[in-house]
Length: 386
Ligand SMILES: *Cc1c(COP(=O)(O)O)cnc(C)c1O
Image 1 (spheres, rainbow, N blue to C red):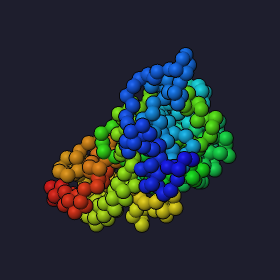
Image 2 (cartoon, rainbow, N blue to C red):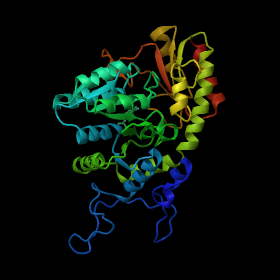
Image 3 (cartoon, rainbow, N blue to C red):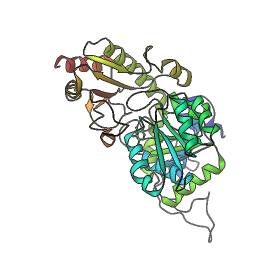
Image 4 (cartoon, rainbow, N blue to C red):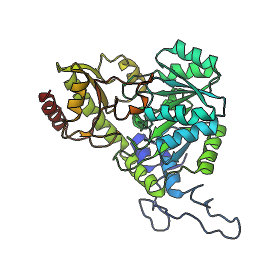
């Protein structure tokens, strides 16, 4: 731990890995675009820098910042969330190994495991992570290497007990992987609850401005970390310097953004709950959400994602998704601007007809940090058209 890696979350977010540049005093460290580094005699590297796929100072700065915020010893930054997941799986698994995956995992994660890694010999079983007896059974029966969970999950906002699941995984000799994209490290640190590995799509809340694609893996174990680092280097799906810089800049304001996302989402969820057109609101900040107490235990606040289903079925969901004006109809989430998504045909189209399929009367809101009165007024005008 260096001096800039201590202190509260926001202090670490702003200072970890971000020491000023010693030659000029530049407060924001420069972005290093160089692909290669001069050697002082053969093999004479300065500060270990040799070639950009292996190490880059801007990527190192991001990795240090991310590790400090997840309470991890190591973090590795990749070119996308899925590249991070692929790197992690290929670093720590071999053909014949097996993953137990939550039944509402991100569609792209399922597609990667099912359609890309499946043919290479990685097996999987899909289970409801809330059913721990079923998880334990699946893990033991298959000599599972990873139990893979998202909490809160996408798009059903299910909350899973990380501590309990870590015990189930560890008892069977498996590792618990938590996709922490929805919560972000500000709201939840899975390693502190016994998870072994955290993955992120940094494209979402960490980058926070819908202007960069990236992913990361964070973990504590020295041996596992070395293997992930090796695959990052040997396969090369690294984040580029400008991507790493944009992610670092976004990450510095994660705490203030998440506070605002959480307050706005709470207000939107409460407004939705009072509407007769609404069948159900899925938001862990609502006291009647089944994961509310658990979320209070393992999360700092409840985040910016709200899903909602309609009494009017698929037609009503589609109509709302296509008639908001402040909420933009788009894939993705976690940016400062509010987005609306129709999962069954957009983010989750790849799981249609599988056990991960999502309801057709559901929309998902990524509640941004605009003025909340404008967000609610926008929903009001959209509802008026139903
Ligand atoms: C977006 C997302 C991913 C994939 O990340 P990319 O950066 O799009 O590759 C993985 N998990 C979750 C929960 C996501 O939302």
